[in-house]
Amino acid sequence: MFDFVSAVIVVAGYYLSGYGDVIAEKTGLSGSWVGLALVVIYLINSFALY
Image (tube, rainbow, N blue to C red; front, side):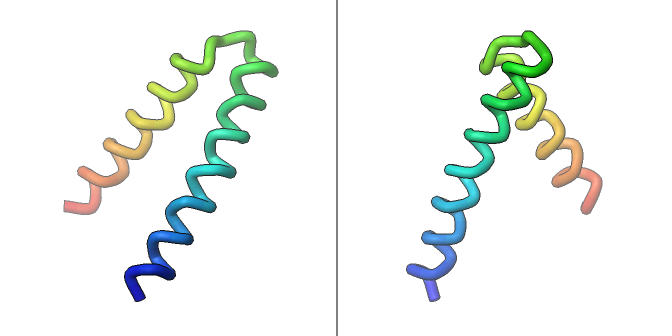
């Protein structure tokens, strides 16, 4: 089970980094700003669950 979940996380991270690059290219922002925005969105959503 651990191996499966690890593989899912690796694949999701791979695709997320690609999507982040596309967003950065289309918006003209740097990849760092897009990454920061994605982390903030994740943190807001994770804290909203509690």
